[in-house]
Amino acid sequence: MNKIRKCLFPVAGYGTRFLPVTKSIPKEMLPIGSKPLIQYAVEEALSCDISDIVMITSKYKGAIRAHFEPHHEIEDNVRGSEKEKLLDGINVIIDTCEFSYVEQQEMLGLGHAIYCGVSVIGDESFAVILPDDLCHNEGDSVLIQMNAVSQNYPHCCVVAIEEVPKGEVGKYGVIEGELVLDSEDTYLVKNMVEKPNITEAPSNLAIIGRYILTKEIFDALRATSPDKNGEIQITDALNSLAAQGKVIAYKFKGKRYDCGSPKGLLKAVNEFSEF
Figure 1 (cartoon, rainbow, N blue to C red):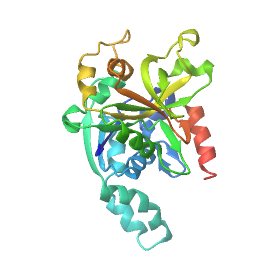
Figure 2: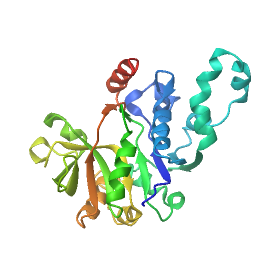
Figure 3: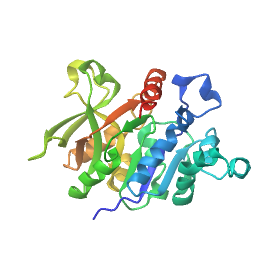
Figure 4: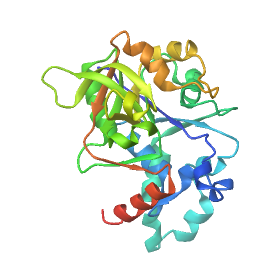
């Protein structure tokens, strides 16, 4: 059994697409209903029995840490009222999860952010959730689905994928892969291309913000050169493992909302009000 105990959340970014609000409010704290994006993400980790939470953060993201700590004044104010139950969800997280915070000194790409967690993650496989990608499922969460796949491929990294319109492949990392025997949703990855041109994209199967990574990813990241923008891309590191047959892509069941853009966030707000 390849038990996943830790989940890493890269939350250090500036959120410039949401300026000016993100001058003072982390984009991960933007609300969908009455809960911020980061709470939905931690709840997904907890749905998979992962309670060791690693935040790769920055000095500007104090609101995230405060959200996952008790607020005795508010709790005292609502105690005994109908509003007290509004804190039930967050209090379960506070009581159940153990939080670690690592400061990312420079914004040098997702791969760099993940590598910042090496000292906390240690020598084991772990999950990664990008809170920008909010997923809704009637059944098992995306991470539960991916964990089930990971049990069948304990020496492989697993990335979540979905089909996107051909015209949008340039926004994502895209895989080239072959369906695993007797599967309709699991691929052995041969190659991964970061934000390809339409004519160069090997497929329309795009990687979204859910990963289960083996300890080998840290060696791969150490060996990965920065791209033309000076950033370390997780796609490049995963490609080196894919060349060894060690990356699986899983087309998850459910719906993803791209909350990294104002338009996507608004769509999530409108549709989540119906759930």
